[in-house]
Length: 224
Image 1: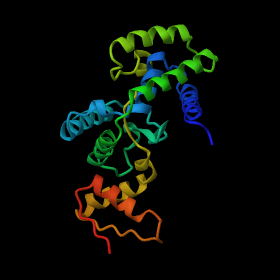
Image 2 (image 1 turned 135 degrees about the vertical axis):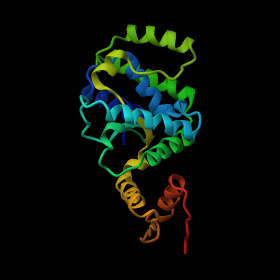
Image 3 (image 1 turned 45 degrees about the vertical axis):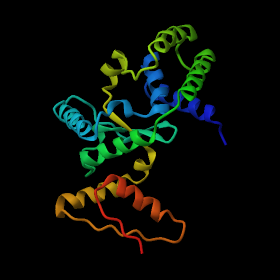
């Protein structure tokens, strides 16, 4: 079994390969999201939903953008980036996506000491030449970043211009059950009320799944 540091290193190298124009700022942002998720973007659930709707409307009006081939991109630590440009046609509702995001932010607080340890893994990758960034440049960035108190940061201009990032950081459990959420949302759109029956043997995860549905939807749960 790989250690947490090895898993983080594998994730960093995978993202560098997938997004070769990543800058130091983007790498640090990735480590930040791996530790703290995306809760810094949430003032309250309603304002989060309004922002999500505005961002998706902007995406819909940009016909030149290339639709991603994956809805979810893993960022390690049980978290994913849910790509907004990829959800068209899935049946998922923005209220559901927003609830994924809000729930994740509420449950993932992160830890400063752990974040600094993860930055050391990033530095070790640069030192070993596994990433195309010099340790000196990373250290210079982190010196200023640390002095600011490690705030949430945006992507670099290079990354934004080339990759057009538009996503929400969500718990991987929503990826694992995404087809179910899409089906429920499609039924809600067509008939307004949905009854979901969960069946399976003891220990199959029925209670966990019903609790997850209860966290996303304003619904009643009944257990025999």
